[in-house]
Image (cartoon, rainbow over all chains, first blue to last red):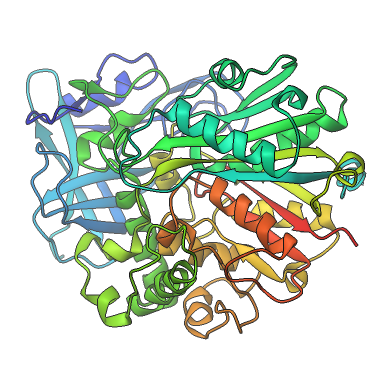
Length: 138
Length: 397
């Protein structure tokens, strides 16, 4: 496989997931949610797995969360992602069952359970990626 | 009577032939050649003729198709084939397909195989997509790959960190799993790591790949193939070699299974209890036995943490106790649960779950290079955290 220098970006026009990326471009975290039973449906898809309703819509959620885990990548396998870097898993506040991934450069000192806040990394006119950083102390 | 039907297939089928190629980092052969070599070896081991094979089960991520293999083996009467996924989670479920085909009268003699140029060809630990945009069409890769979360090691290292935080699991405890597998490989001339010993200093000194995991937490990358032959127990008893009876086999997943290939397992509520937990419950119920009845186990070990969490999920120790259990000596030849007696994926070779089935049969036959004395039952597990599968093999008493 040829090694590429360019960072691979998310598709933003998929019928099930495009609403997430459209919201990101506006600086908003938006998650699929069931109108009937209020369950969040992430990864986004049309039918609610809890009550089987087809009536799910995009719902804004706060850009805050809790760190579930992280890894520090040391071996470079993709030139677009120079090592070391830290990848985080964050449970989004007030959105039960919704967990998102984030990317930080370098080796970042983190503690599981710490509070995180969302930021929005604009890549180009089409793609803005939600990212996560440790929340500033209160 | 949830398990009633499954009880009726207890011990009704058996593995009667096993075959492997050599395991290397550069086979110089196509995956079709490797598959053919392993299948012919398994057919010969069973003392059957290729003409007697009428079923093939392949794995979804392998490149060799059922018709490729049938043509290469010169099969003349193929009447059942199936593809089972996902990847390393499939192999025991592939055997389940063979059992189902035999029990329902769709086939008599079924080959289950995997064939990979896992080092010189398609490397599982490298980025899998070469396109500018990733995701869509139900893959959900857009939520992972553009963040640099790309390969199994990234996923397992996050799961390992959570296990460490929740239960106090240490890197050295993971190291005991690596060392155990290496000792078994050192006794197995066919293992890729046969001639290389490993100390705890070697383990702790190996380079970090995706912290908290290091090189020796990772399995090998292997070119090779394995095959096994499944037939009815009745027919198996007419063949020269002692059958490895399939006491029970099960597939399963967790309630909050996720869509997508495998990285989406990171979004499940628990990162430290896997589909191996429900698979274990189904498997033991079908088998009518429990973890205390298992003499030896071949635990899927694409990473050390993969094996450690399964020790808990399959009930050999309590949840969270996998680290102390691994460090206690229980996994060694003199312990209560010798594991991965040919060296496992960590040190024998990585044919994604099939090597473990082959070694399970050797234990039941009494022909392992690290034979557990009087082994009558062997647990074999397939990959996690994908939807998984497992089986229990036993001697014909």
